[in-house]
Each structure stands twice: as C-alpha cells, then as structure tokens.
Amino acid sequence: MKCYINGIEREVKPKTTILDLAREIGIEIPTLCHMKLDNFCYENKPSSCRLCMVEVEGRKTLCTACSEEITEGMVIKTNTPRAVEARKTNLELLLSNHPKDCLVCPKNLECELQELANRLGIRMVEYPGERMTHRIDKSSASLLRTPEKCVMCRRCETMCNEVQTVGTLSALNRGFDAIVAPAFQMKLNESSCTFCGQCAAVCPTGAIVEVDETHEVLKAIRDENKHVVVQIAPAIRVAIGELFNKAPGSITTGKLVTALRDIGFDTVFDTDFSADLTIMEEASELVDRVVNNKTMPILTSCCPAWVRFIETNFPNLLDIPSSCKSPQIMMGAMVKTYYAKQTGINPANIVTVSVMPCTAKKAEARRSELSNDGFRDVDYVISTRELGQMIRYYGIDFDNLEESEFDNLMGESTGAGTIFGTTGGVIEAAVRTAYELLTGKELENVDFKELRGLKGIRSATIKLGNRDFTIGIAHGLGNARKLLEEVEEDQNKYDAIEIMACPGGCIGGAGQPYHHGNSEIIKRRQEALYEIDKNKPIRKSHENPMIQKIYKDFLGEVYGAKAHELLHTTYTP
Ligand code: HC0
Ligand code: SF4
Image (tube, rainbow, N blue to C red; front, side, top):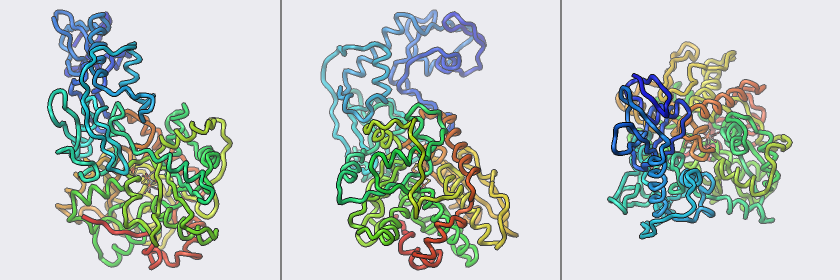
C-alpha cells in the first residue's frame, strides 16, 4: 500500500507501523519504551513513554508511531512543531518524576533517558511536584534495582516474562506509584530471579544495573599483602573493543592481557584454559554415563542463570545436569590449590577475580558450595563493562596497547575452550573430546557446523563411532523451557543438551557492552570466536599440554577422586 512520510512516497506491507517505516528509511523518531529483539522476534511496544508522537493528516490528535499501523494513502509528518513540542512535554513530565543524580548514576552517559533529554534540548525541568519513592533493592549479588529510576517502559518485564519466561518482574501499583518489580515487592534474592540480567541489558535507565564490584577489586590490588589473580572469559575478547570504538567482533585478547597487567593484577589467566579443563571432566562424565547406562541426557552446567532456572523450575530433572563446576569456578579452585602450591603463596592471601560477560556469575561466585577449605573459589566478578570502566579510570589507551601473553601454568587454551562463549560452543567442544574417548579414533574434522548458528532451539544428530548421538541446543531461557518440556515428555529424545540463558550465549551476556537487541552485533562476536578457534594450533581440549600436565602433576586421574573434590558440585531444588 502507498503512503507519504515527510513528503516521500513509499510502498509498505500491511501491518507496518509508522516507526517501522521511519527506521527503514532513516527518519529519526525518539522512543524509550519501544524495543525490538530481532533475534527473538519479540517487540515491546506498550506505547507508554509517548515520545514517538507524530501527526497524521486528517486527524485531530497526534498518534504514537510505534503502535500506529499505516493505512492506504496515509500522510505522515514526523517533525511538525506540534509533534516535537508534545514529545518534549512528555519527556519533561517523565523527568519531573526522575532522580537527577546523573553524575553518579551507574548508567551515566549510557542512559537512554539522559540521551533523549539532551537530544530534545531540555535544559530545565518544569512541573515540579511530588516524586515517587521506593526502596532500593540491594539484596542480590548480581543486580541492583533502583525503582525510582523506572520509567515504566516495561522492557524488563517483556524480557523477564516473554523471552526468558522467568516471571519475576511485573507491573505493580497504579498511576503515580506504578513500578515494575517482583511480586509483593519481594527482594530479588528471595524471588525466582535467575540473575541472567537480561532485564538490565534492556533497561534504558539506571533502574536495573549490575552490582559494581570494581571498588573491592581495586582495594585488593592496592593491598600489598594480597596476590590478585584475574581470569578472562571467552566472550570478553570479542566484545570489549566496542567500548573503545572498535567494531563488534574485533579480537583484542593480547591488548586485554596487557591492560589487566597495567591495572595491577599480579597474574592473568585465561578462562579458556579452564573451559578445556571442564571438557576433560564433562566429556568423561558423558562417556561414563553412556558406557555404564547412567542417566541421560547430560546437560551442560556452566551457565549459572540456567542452573538456577532448572533448580527453581524443574527440580524433578536435577539428576541430568553435569556435575562439573563452571570454568570460572574451576579456575578459581585451581588457583587457590594448584597455583598456590606451585608458587608457594598462601591461598588466604590470594584474591581471585573474574572478568565475565555475565551478571549471574557474580551470584554464582557466592554459592556456598563453590569453595574449598573455607576459601571461596572466586572472590570477585566484574563485567566487561566494569573492566572497560577500570581501563578508563587508569587512563589506559586501550587501542594503542602492545599485545601480551597470558601467564604460564593456566594461560594456554585450545580452540575448543574459546568457543564456549557462543551458543553451541560448549557442546561442540565436548563432542570433539567425547568422540575420541568413545571411539579411540582420531577426529579429523573438528568443525561440527550443524551445531552452530543463532536459531533459538537447534538439534542435530551426529555419529560418534557407530552410535547416533542426538544433541539439543537452546539459548534464552524461554527456549530452554521448551527444550526441557520435551525432555520431561521423552527423556530418550536427546543424548546431550547445551543451554545458555542469554541470547547468543555469553557473547550476549548482560555484562557485555549494550547491544540493544541488535543481532548483527551478536553475530559478529560469534564469528570472531569461531575465527579464534580456526586459527588455534590445537583445537581439542584433551590435547592442551598444560591440561595434560595439570592432571599428571596435581589432579591425578581425569574424573577421579581429586578432580571430583575440586571440580564437581551438586544442585539444590
Ligand atoms: Fe561464559 Fe563460561 S563460556 S559461562 O558463557 O562454560 O560468563 O564467555 O566464562 O565459566 O569458559 C560466561 C563466557 C564463561 C564459564 C567459560 C563456560
Ligand atoms: Fe551468564 Fe553466559 Fe549464562 Fe548469560 S549465557 S547468564 S552470560 S553464563
């Protein structure tokens, strides 16, 4: 059908909204509540912010571009003085009920409300009056809720309920007191929240953000009695560049290592190494379950939001996740035992820090069972964004850093460890090792392309020797729920399942640079991880010489007693 927008004639398909068309042809219309997650086919358009007002010829009232579908011959004007004034008034009303602590807000300079206020030229907020007040929720180790900063865009609610199907957040109260919060304003750590943080990833303001641990980390670095060991997750190296004006998917591993040393960390290890270690244990567990007819399917257990989701929602299935601790926790455990022994440093003086793309990893580190001899495996977790902040704090010129290598002992990794950071990667890495363990033959082609991609739920049957092995993969907890419901119906349908809570896996984690639902960014980060894998001289975890050495010198038998003591865990309904 034909329409006219700012004098331009266009043909559009039925159901196209004014906002869809404007974005397609590059006409800017501000909005705060609208959110399109193209990778999940979800759209949030409650039309609550009323910032996308436009004029349609022949109508007395303005309409909201995000919800108004175009009709035949419609004449739209997006920038009339009346429309622009209405947007400004609506924004001023929003700001009149919003704290003005932008300078110290965790979202400072990344806040969409702040950016719009600047774009619409607001220099003074009229309509002074009462401001809503709500208690700040500091209960969780992962996420900080400041409800006064909620603008009722309801993006988080859509994320939590529709996409993740976790059902923690919903709109409470009416009118002036309306906020999005857990039912009965329950504290997050008492609710069903999985701490995946996808609510924070889409919140336009500072109403939900990750808990900042940079100050504790800096304090430990300054403490001369502390030996601070940092590890970096696979997904960081392909995303942190975005904070320093590099294109999504830029690979910055060597610069990252240098930056961490410049900040003052004593030792820099690679979570890719402990991902290889995870595969040693997980592939052996898989083989044990297959050979000895134990519980199938096996589920990957490295995503803590996913672990909390199954504990809360499917307590009847808790015998199927692998008992392996996640790579971040395995690394922490090895640092406080193996590394402490090798270096002669008292583990009481070692502080382990992880840089993770994830908010749930902060809560994972505090799970009481993830410790040994009274020492927490991991002490502090900072996100990709928090590390970016620390790099800026020290005035480090990230782009011009020299590249350097990880420290010895636990710094060498294979391509299999690297692809953990993307959906499908953990199970592909496991298959590369399980194939050789089960068949005793060398795997020549390590690329299992049938396990790759960004489709929300995928499955593939691959041959492990003369056995057909059916693998299920899901990313996003809504997709995980669907896959688990299939398992509840037929436990023989899959042999192995990989689940990651975030869109795309950890590359789309809530601690990563904001990607605003743009799947192109996720795709670039994913391609970069496969690129690193392709260029690694060793691509199977069990061929990592440092891993072989660690079993020989310290852990003993793979999947043996000491490995169980340090590298495995249990789950609680
Ligand atoms: Fe991930 Fe991990 S891959 S969960 O996604 O398994 O956070 O990147 O570090 O632990 O390795 C996150 C990313 C990790 C862990 C690894 C796994
Ligand atoms: Fe964290 Fe990765 Fe799980 Fe997301 S997918 S919650 S980033 S571990």
